[in-house]
Image 1 (cartoon, rainbow, N blue to C red):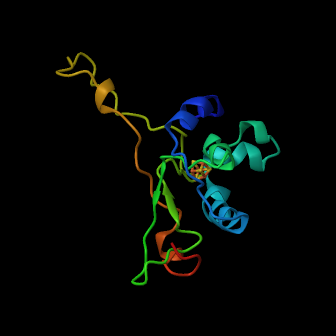
Image 2 (cartoon, rainbow, N blue to C red):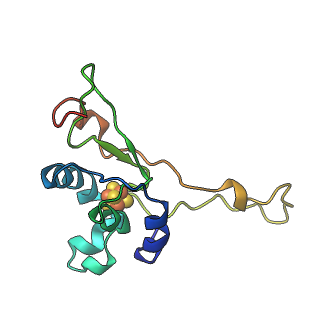
Length: 138
Ligand code: SF4
């Protein structure tokens, strides 16, 4: 995923605001995007190369890559855990994009890989740090 993917990501996004107010938005991005490799250029002073999903959310759309986080027994979610971004990748966690295991040399492919590759689910920054029910109510 790169900033050039913005148009496609915008097209895929849901026509609903991701956050009900700026506090929610800042709380979530500070807890999740602040360590993510996709927004590192913005943190280093190049906002044009920042995460395109954040830009999508600023257009009052919800990226489909943001799936609902856990709710507590009262149906409340935490600010930090409101969404789980499937594109999250810690900035110290290696290359940006998944790297498929190469085919062994001389090995024929039974099926082409392409249709079976897709978004890979990365771990949350630290699930234990984001218990449900510490922030807004859904
Ligand atoms: S990929 Fe997800 S977690 Fe990472 S900066 Fe973008 S919106 Fe934030």
